[in-house]
Amino acid sequence: MVSANASNDNPLAPPPWLNAPPVEPYPFEESHDLRVGPKLHPTLDGLLPYVGVWRGRGRGGFPTIEDFDFAQEIRISHDGRPFLHYESRAWILDEQSRPVRPAGREVGWWRPVLDGDRATDELEALLTTPTGVMELHIGRRKGTQIEFVTDAVVRTSTAKEVTAGHRLFGIVEGALLYAQDMAAVGQPLSPHLSARLIRVAG
Image 1 (cartoon, helix red, strand yellow):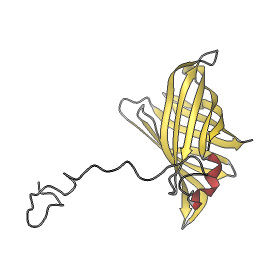
Image 2 (image 1 turned 45 degrees about the vertical axis):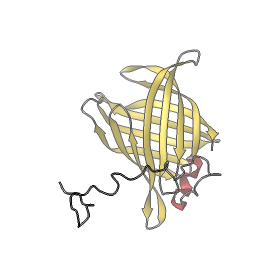
Image 3 (image 1 turned 180 degrees about the horizontal axis):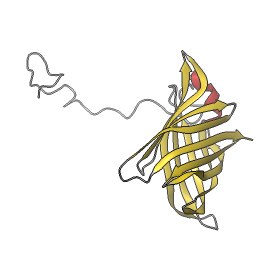
Image 4 (image 1 turned 135 degrees about the vertical axis):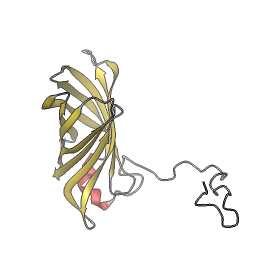
């Protein structure tokens, strides 16, 4: 197969990047702290209160499992472009609040829906888990509250059946609160997770 980058003189020559020297580390900064790093994109002004690192406790459950206590850390950051990077990791706690084992992880992006160059109150979010589930959410921001509902759920062939979700986020007295409902494994939309997280950085 002839490379699209091969020279006209020698169409079988290797592309110029094949033997190029190594590149330096990724040169663009991402920050969860508005005091350092790139300037927040103006279309994200309505989401500014969420930028930071949050840590706290929550309670989980579902009709098919026993209730459980968990701790969680959420990092919401930006790189100057019109979206936020969202990363969450949680761990199960025992009755003495000691860590038992790792729990759910998610990564994804929140994006405001734009009208020209202006952000509307509508949002899009894409969230992915290492257990093979990807959720596309549509949402709306009202002040410091955000409500998301799933528009589509995509699963790998080995993932548990998740069919729908609903999430509420809010900044209340400086803390990040959320509640998450889920429809899965034949169960209708049911309460699944809720937590209160305190800002620890940003």
